[in-house]
Image (cartoon, rainbow, N blue to C red):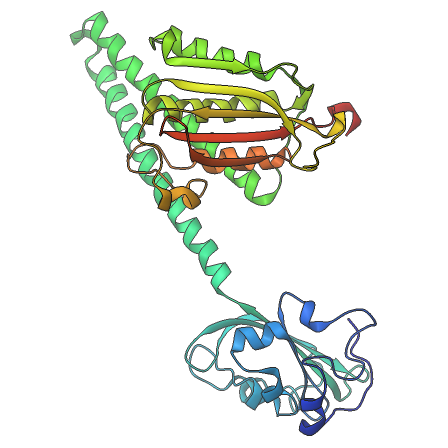
Length: 384
């Protein structure tokens, strides 16, 4: 963004002008108030000539009060040791070779932290300063991210400790006293080790999924997916494992549109939603597979390419409290029952949205929880 060569207006002119656009501060069509970060610009005399809406929000100083004032008064920053920042850095009287100040945490009046970086615009190399351009960022979003990462590390450490302790204990016991155990005892301990190893593997897979979702690097390998058949396989697996067949009700509305999606990722979504209904719900687990309008379209007269497939998984249990509905898809949400990492539904939402779909949670007709996700038809992998 260019800052132009307009003269620095006085405080009286600044109060008459629009909130943050002064002279030729921006290229045509670019409004500093549209920037997501705070922008403060001082002229060659050190007076503020631009103070955008984000800067006013972050500092709680109205733009009209900041414009025309000396930079150190309009933006009275201190470092974490209580030293006046502008006196310490002295942008106008310091070394002429300096062109910027790297981003760092500074304090506003009242002790609120803000991330600040600065650029010194000179008339020519080593020449006098024409502009000091300051960028401000609120630290709250970064703090939330840091807290989330700390919670993730603590959760992972806790979840890993139990199965690894079990694996270490049983393997050490078997190695030291192999001859003392019967075959049945050895089998039981090895089965426990195998189950705990699978638990660690699942946790690592969840962490990798979260990393890819958060960084936008979740890869999809789209293939034709028969959603009805995919749901049927999951139900059959539960029946084979001992669940009564009449606990599941699968309803498929035909014709379904041809769906191109990542079959492994869709299996992960179905596995998580159906497992939640079986473990935490009661009564019949109902899965409805129906055609729907693509979440990317939404019109009543959509064309075939705007069609979608919708899957609803509901149970007849106590359901999810109303006050918890908006936290279901966040990290570490476990509801009223403990167990698991609380990462599954966060990953489910990331997978569905990576496909261009949507997922919602509500109350089922039978009173339990109802999860519904909708996937657009998608594009074949060979056309991407």
